[in-house]
Amino acid sequence: MANLPAPPLTMLDGASLFLDFDGTLVDFVIDPAKAAVDNRLRTLLGQLASRLDHRLAILSGRSLDELTDRIRLGPIAMAGSHGLERRAANGRVTRAPVPPEFAFAVASARTFAEAHNLLLEVKAAGVALHYRDSLHAEADVDRFAHDLAIRTGLELQRGKCVRELKVPGADKGDAVRAFMTEPPFASGRPVVMGDDLTDEHAFEAAAALGGCGILIGDHRPTAARFRLPSVAASLAFLGARV
Image (cartoon, rainbow, N blue to C red; front, top):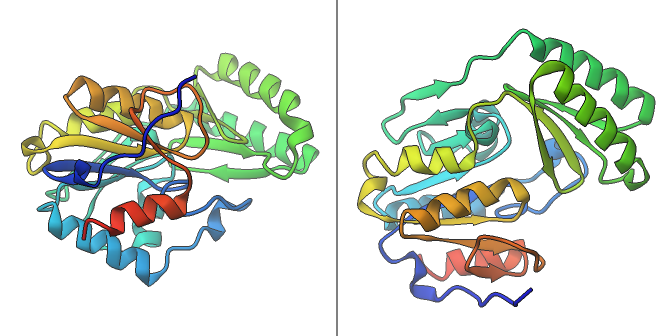
């Protein structure tokens, strides 16, 4: 596995920029509800949006409503729930319908989480089991999530110390492709910054559209062309362009 170079400082010139949230803009915490968004980050995002003529969007596995409440930057473009919810630059919101099996998945995951002392995160179109502080439970979580996906028809999404059952039908790559058909994003070149396996779809979509991905974190197999080692390096790179 070859080491990826750092992105050049000119990478954001003319870019349509898509930013993952956890692990890219904020450091991971055991409880996702405690991820901090301070005024410096809000100021940075506002400056980036202005510099890029509003060709800036947040892509996250978190729900659209939670992202909006946490970031508090007004009508910035966002995709939540791994692309199943999307707010375009003009404010139009689209959400995938949630099937009846989702309620069963939530109830089953809650029972499993309580039995194994895991953190459960219920989203608008997904339910996630976090085991960052219970790494010994990974095999049990994998088996449970795999079986529940088969029983419900929901999609199993693997991430860093998390397994999520989500409504099928979209991913972060679909969100990038949709944004890139609309103003103001269509006039730019897609650049995606993300850290997790869920960002690989977005890296691939950006590359297919003439752009690229920037992996945040440790080296691993990836469709990204560049890498930054940490959230701090990610913020420093973004800050150098405003």
